[in-house]
Image (tube, rainbow, N blue to C red; front, side):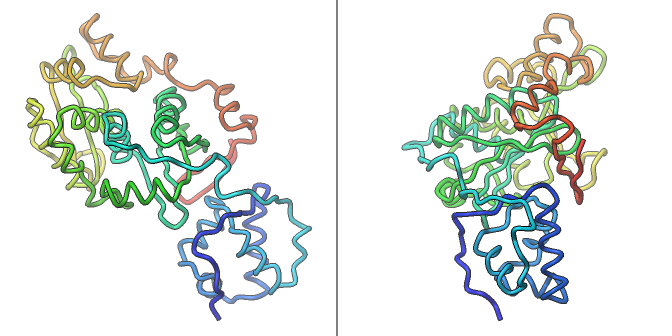
Length: 334
């Protein structure tokens, strides 16, 4: 029998690392033959159960109480506490679409995700993005939506920047056409009516899913890749409208089913003069190229931009040895 559980819970259970998994496995062994039956009982889909199992998402208090009751398991044998859905206050929605909001939309189109079942908005960046993910994006979110963020360590040294808001989630979906997965997402059409909005959105896209790289020994290229064909055609259209000459869209040879486009030399200079970048790695690379005639490789600038262990510990409020890394299909400690 499927339980009647509120669609959106306001209180969640925060277990000690590993104990949410142990709790659910013990419940399954006592009460359910399969994970599918547990999912049906709780009124969620099967994938949500596995999000709970690998501890990517906290278990709602309502589900925790129901499972504890039907299994006769003493919950005191586990270490946990109740936490609110969002401890960071209610959100606001900007009164108008401005360049800052347009840049945020570009960031979301590039490296953002929106989980509609819990209204979590996540932006993921690599370790070389440094203060872009830890300072620029959180400040933008605070200014736009009056929300603070939390961070989570992900594979290859990167970070997730996250916040939750039903109001913002519904706004992004309804007004900006954003949805996950982003297969059919594109730059909002009304941005094409205002070059300032279009430039800001393109900046957000390149700062997340693009980058400045060495083309030949002394030449530069701006490279953008994305799995969404719709999005990359939208970006191509935007660049043409702004007076650039982007390359034809190609398949990225390093990653299957990923599309790519490029800007070269004169267009690279035009891009940084007219659109610019808020990602320090791109600023450093561009200035180095202008001054020395050669685009540095990532490893040559990582000391200037990569987050130090102490900074990661401060953001995550944990010692390096305790930081949990989220990767594809696994969770591990450093």
